[in-house]
Structure formats: structure tokens, C-alpha cells
Image (cartoon, rainbow, N blue to C red):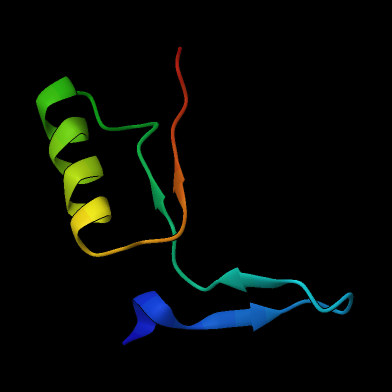
Length: 51
């Protein structure tokens, strides 16, 4: 599954191929649901931005 796949950088560090960004989601409830989904799916990277 792509959520578990990673890239290996030249220094050996592995990073996820897919991350979830929430910056442009206009509705707080949708943002909260997206965060819960990411947690439930064991996503390794969730980036949030406060305006």
C-alpha cells in the first residue's frame, strides 16, 4: 500500500512517499476528520499549519 512506501534519501534517511497536508482545508471539522483518518491509517507524516 502506498501509505507504507518510502523513499530513501542519499544520506540514508527514509521519508514517506505520501503525506497529508491540511493547510487549505477551510472547515475545522473536515481538518479534524482528516487528522483522525491519518491516525487510524497509521500515516507517518501529517503536516499542519496555523494561520
